[in-house]
Amino acid sequence: MIKIRDIESVMKLYQNYYDRVSAELMVLKKNVSDGARLHAIKHRKTYQYYIRWNEPNKESKYIRKEKIEEAKILAQVEYYEKLLGKLKNDIKCLDKLKETWSGDPFNWVENNMSQGKYVLVTPVYCNDECYIQEWKEQMYEKMQFKEKSTEFYTRQGIRVRSKSEMIIADILDEMQVPFLYEKPLKLGTWTIHPDFTLLDINKRREIYWEHFGIMDDMDYRNDAFIKMRKYEECGFCQHDSVIWTFETGRQPLNTKVMRKMIMQLAKTLGYR
Figure 1 (cartoon, helix red, strand yellow):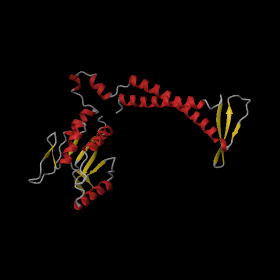
Figure 2 (cartoon, helix red, strand yellow):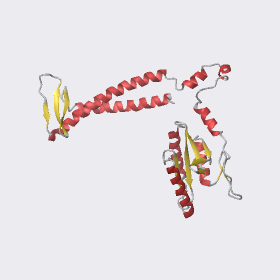
Figure 3 (tube, helix red, strand yellow):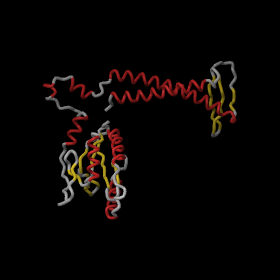
Figure 4 (spheres, helix red, strand yellow):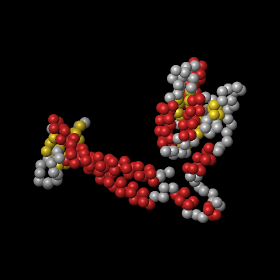
């Protein structure tokens, strides 16, 4: 869903480039004769360059290899001029779009119907807030905990299996990234329970986070690599649809780095 802030962000980006290129073009033009334009002719596997002027009676000037910097300046000037024209036009178009864009046509309709009528409607689209809430409330079969295992609870009261998982869950909650703990996932003939299932609200898809916390244990490490390979075989790729984090006894979870990572993740998934 395109939002007003997305349009404003692109406008700001384009305006920044427009200002920068305008300044650089002014400097370059000081080294270019009035009316001079670069002309390129294909010659075998390379190009020959000429300077042409807007004046019809003025002869073209061939640019020798040792003078190629002159051609580069003229080419850069033309590039900047074309880019500035396009940026200026697109900024105007985006500005007009911002004035008329509702931001969310489905939400607009809801706000422009009486509540008494809208409760009778079956909406064709669920807004982000509604979608997130329904996703968080889904039911699934959870893994059981071993008897007498250490109990760790998140701020939401969710029981997890380690202190590191508790820290990750609490930071996700702090950054308002919704998650489901150990929701089952089918990988071929396997059914596994990823530590965290996250919702990418931008693309309305799930991504998975596995935290491997005892990587200095050989058996645990081998099982972890088997699990990672299974993810890959089923088309789940690191930094796209699955996240892997690791720690050992000597290299425990760095909460400062983890908070920074999740903050960036929250932006990527559409929550900041």
